[in-house]
Image (cartoon, rainbow, N blue to C red; front, side, top):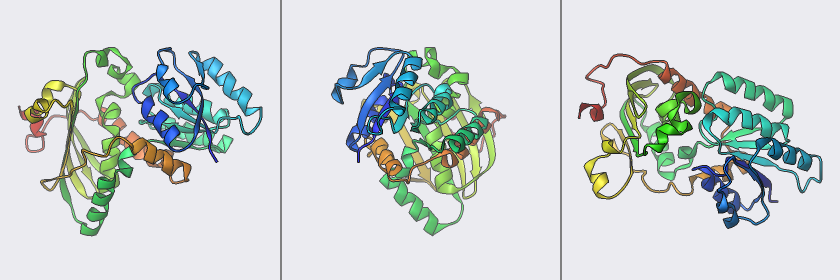
Length: 313
């Protein structure tokens, strides 16, 4: 039986992936809200979406539906709003009688997770999140292979995703609203690393500014050097020549992990898992939220033997 969905932040960058996931899992979008009204994309999915530019009116509409017929009420609220609003919008969803499906990061600071767990218990509703790399077929296969191998591994993670001047002007360029580079673009990779290699031991940060971060993490079964950047000039020459704007690389013991393809439908796969009762909740989100908070608090002096090669240009 199909479910009714509403979307918060439907005008944002990531919202189309949620809209496709709602449609492709056979569900119905009934309401949406965004402070910006340039949301013509909604017509690609339905002409019957009740749209609001004010969260208060959206909240009132969901409450009206909750008190009406069961067939009309909203069962899930997908949250695509700025990072610093995620916990507030999760609470709105649960109080409206719906489950929440929230974009990463679920929250910026780990103590906000405790409050969300309390409201889950109070409302008997669930908060789910998008940890899309956990459903990537190549990475699932890698995890199974690593579990068979055992032992300690040396890992390098590099993620460069080009962003123009708008990035620093927007909420994404403000650490208190986005969590900074480590949280905003890195959290799903940090979640992946812990999913693959176990719990965190030591953390070092070698470089941190508005556009780049680099550091070292000691995990249960891996030593990880990592580099994150939103600066287009950091892209390798071969990537620039190919006209691409993003570079992802993970090596394990010097071997490149190939996972460049298969990103387009990962949100849909997470939705499928969530609707089947196998999604990712607060428990799964907590380690990466705690790690990125620790990274933001851990700027140290570099050690040359561990510094990421991208910083040696």
